[in-house]
Amino acid sequence: MGQIATKGLYHFVRLFTALWFLYAGLNFFLYPDDQRLGLVPASHDFTVALIASGIFAWIKAIEVVLGITLLVHRFMPLTIVALVPINFVVVYYNWVLEPHRGTFIAGGLTLLFTAYLAWSWRAWFWPLLTFRGAPQHDFKPHFTTIRFTGDAAK
Amino acid sequence: MTNELPDALPGPSMKWVYHLCRLIFGAWWLFSGCMHFFWPQLQPLGDEQPAIDFTLALMASGLFDWIKVAEIVLGLTMLANRLMPLTVLALVPINLVIVYWNFVLDEGLVEWTFGAMTILFNAVLAWPWRRYYWRLFAWNGRPDFSYRPGVQG
Image 1 (cartoon, rainbow over the protein chains, first blue to last red):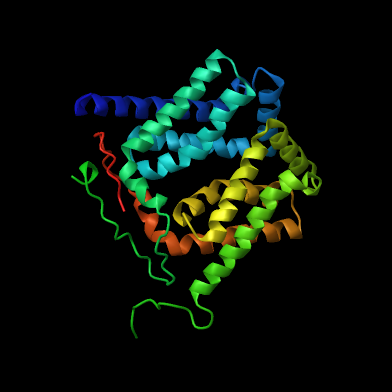
Image 2 (cartoon, rainbow over the protein chains, first blue to last red):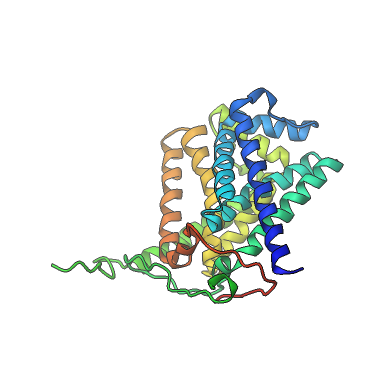
């Protein structure tokens, strides 16, 4: 696949995820009665407990923010890092708590799209995998001196 | 008077504060993770009903087991002082839920203390590795559309 095709695929994945997150986030606040609670007891009880704890509202607010940053294509490295824990739970919900064909597909797409977005920004993430790093035990900010090469730096 | 920031505080240096926090937090996480599997009867569910309901729902979903496995792994990496940039990043979402649990769901002096200590430990552990995180705040970057891994040191 050429670079034009991969660029197109990247923007399709980004916009699809953005709209998905924006819809899922806004839907909770604008039409709370439409909130999907789950079709089986395991997923239903989990969703109801999250809503009752109040943490669901925070997750939905984050989904709205991430939907906007994905849509405007800004703060992408931070956005992808924030997507990971939310999407981990989304995939778990779809594959373990409510397994059927539709949710298998939704979980698979969530995993694939997150992985593809992260792959496209991999230059920003490699330093995080440092096994033995060099911590800075002072008060200077040390704005990064790690230099990036390759296509991302062109 | 110079505008230069000091390299270290007078008294115990940041290095030793960092290592103390790392070892305490690492041991705390390792114990908390192992406790769920070896001594499940010790698992605190909370004192307030919202906290109990939330913990029981997490357990019933099976997600609690995964969180506890993550706590064991992160406890080990903290104790070994390895993979620290990734470890500190992985601590954040789990700690957000722990802080929420301690400050909102299960209020009380002990819970507030644990919540505050969680924030403090996370901040002390993140600060020395800040160099690895600044790039994540890039407002406008360029994705890499090639197939080359572009491994960065």
